[in-house]
Image 1 (tube, helix red, strand yellow):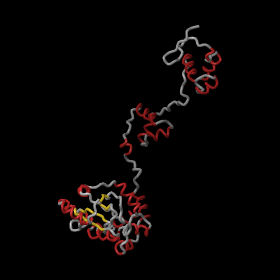
Image 2 (image 1 turned 180 degrees about the vertical axis):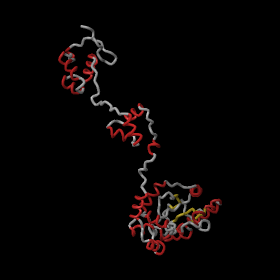
Image 3 (image 1 turned 30 degrees about the horizontal axis):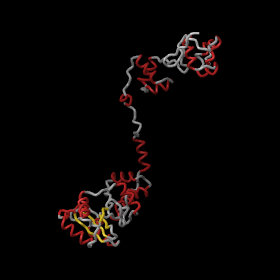
Image 4 (image 1 turned 90 degrees about the vertical axis):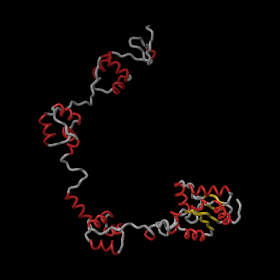
Length: 334
């Protein structure tokens, strides 16, 4: 018995004896004849099931016998005549893909025959030249589309927009068209379009307030932190142990307002730090009335809070700030 030798992959080296008790079955003449006859016709899995052998064993045996398996799904490419191809590609100006679909072949086959017959392949821009853009409509179609959604009663439109002072969205609902159609008609008829004004009663949120729960969610996502001026005041309060803590990050709400500092000894007292640009109407006329000195004091008074307002320029004189907070806190030590 020859020695059993394996290669680096653990396979038995060709020509060495493998004993039958190891479970490896030898090929007999009938099996070899079956393989020769059906190798090209049948799949590996079908031969494997019929003979009871592994696919790797079948492939190896076929290699030893010199059998070659052609691709059963392969079809010979159709030959296209030069005249026919020129007619389709140059005269009819069909694309490569269109010709391929018509001839029931692949696009690469058409490219192959074009190159073989020295027919110049069109570029993408040349291909699109002379063809209508798929997204563009003809003038007739555009007219039809416009006539369907056109606002015919222009007098009514002018009355609703100019005299009754309705907005574009409300007019669109009356005429059963899109707001863009109303806007386009106004522009076409040279009716001056009004600027949107959301101040005061025109604001859809006028007279409404968010609940404390919703405000808490909004403020959490803002990740508010004390700014530079607030940090200065915070240092003064901590240094002198005044009974106030920072709450401008949205910890506490007083009916929709967030105070900057609040008393932590149970007294209803708050401190607000104001900047001239955001709270003084003499400096900035565009600020809302709600953020002014008078309205802020009135708001806190309504809910039983005493409010001290410190202007940012007052922080220069620390002694005055100390006296102001001492008087306001009423001698209450932290």
